[in-house]
Length: 307
Image 1 (cartoon, rainbow, N blue to C red):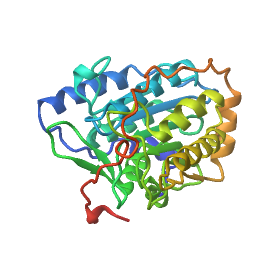
Image 2: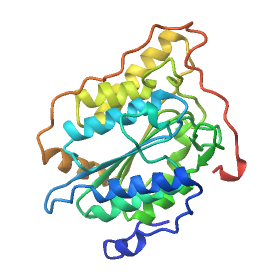
Image 3: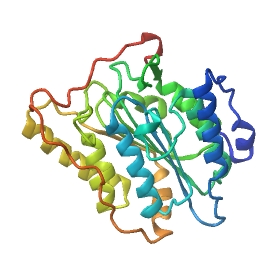
Image 4: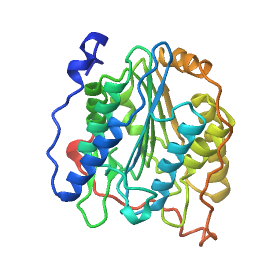
């Protein structure tokens, strides 16, 4: 699907949304509407960064850690204070405050709300998704004691297009995430993916506080530079070194850069003075058996959603 032209964007930002399913979904939708209403307005003549951070698997705290860190990083370092939405499938008692659930409907609502707040000609979106991925390239949305849901690359592209968001940085920290590239590639999009389409990535599990990619790009990379591509190059080297030392199959993180997004990102970086580096607040636990930790779980495969 082609991106909406600027004059058409407003009419395309109200996608057909699935109905809320139960009281928890209803409460979650209300939380999201509250957060959307509280978004800081776009500043005319200034390239604003808006951020959506999505923790897909609510049974593992590692994904929650990363999205909460990104919220703080965007607020304090990336000039995005008041322009961040966070979705997480974790139980409320494991969160600093109640957060909207990371389900398909809320993902569409969040993108639509961000699209309404943004100027499609000036502003850009950083979408960070962290969870497990399936071998046929679907992103896991898991709530404790609920049926799993799977987000396909085509569904994600459809939601982005419907929101009218033109300038995009999409980061997918999940196994086999390179399989999202074909559906999401665009001249105005930078794609960063934690693994090749046929490779797992590492660092999941409750004995970890950050995935390998999250640690290397989100934490170390963005503390060293605000250039997302340069941070990716640094992260890729660090991940390769770590995986080699541990005897793992290389995940081979992937990057796809559209021909126009580089200039947009350079203009964004030139428009503000970054805040200081932000320490990661979660300490690594004592290491478990190196042969047993951080192995990605097998997930359900739905062939109907593969590309």
